[in-house]
Length: 222
Length: 244
Image: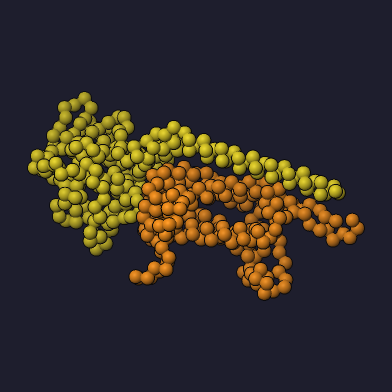
């Protein structure tokens, strides 16, 4: 016997899916802007392990010489991205959904156990509510990173009029560096998120679209 | 199928159809946006939003908000030379004077000595190139607001200012509030020495509240206007305001 269990409220689902193309467009237009001064790398002194980004990567995505286009798109979609994100945070706060999402005192230990479980090093996963400890930490970090991206973005956007903010973040170039690495962290989250969604299966994915989960009641009579 | 599964199927179908419709609408919106007639190389709805951004930034722009200043030890040893439009070789610095055009008034011709006679201000500020690199330099010159008070006192409430190179090939449009900002200089000195030619001698604009594209070198003409003037890079798809 199965029953429907409500999992994700309508607002969370809409805001999540609207965010997806908006974040993508912010990253894409940001890449067009970054190309014009692509100075970041992983390395030290004369040694560069990886330069962001290789020429072939730019060429394959047709990035070069599109700075003006990138800036105009970035400063168009920033409004929608921020409004959607603000609506999400507001909804979490007002509806009480934040209780499912924010890490609690068990989350760090649980996240470790979840990771061991995911890596097949441990048979059982710790008991959880809507989200496990690793998810709580990941989903909260993403909100913090997105807010960080807005704040560092503002410092890069208006380093004179918001000079205090740029100075607080370590100066214009530091804010630009922070903006870049927060974006890379979001990309990293995205790939782990996709892998975990694939791993979790259909019922979990459907719950983010349709809102419910089909769960066994434990009742044996069909 | 029992009733729970039927209910699940109905809900699921409805939700996926709605999401599909949303995806189609989003893609349609994107296609529509990209295919709108362009204004200065940008689809008009995006150009309109850039103007909204300008209004927001303009409302916050204040003579009280100053761009960060730096110590002279932080000055970059070599200032990168970027952009040579309007910087042709057919230029005689000895014959140079600044043309000033004021509505309903005779045009003025102003010499460098007249500008040097204005109170001199020095500031160590960051040059923000629109490409994303920055350089710190020490600039010396006269405040544009002092220049305006002296030579165009009737224009203290002008709406816009336009500046052009002598050959008219490079031109910038400025909102008057940014031009009259206390850190905006008509600059004739760089790092304590006479402004080099590649950096815009005899006179260039230093305007920390704008990207480098507005810091026009080799100013030939200054116009005070009520209507929004053209701007070289805004015609190429960049934001007209380009404020920082």
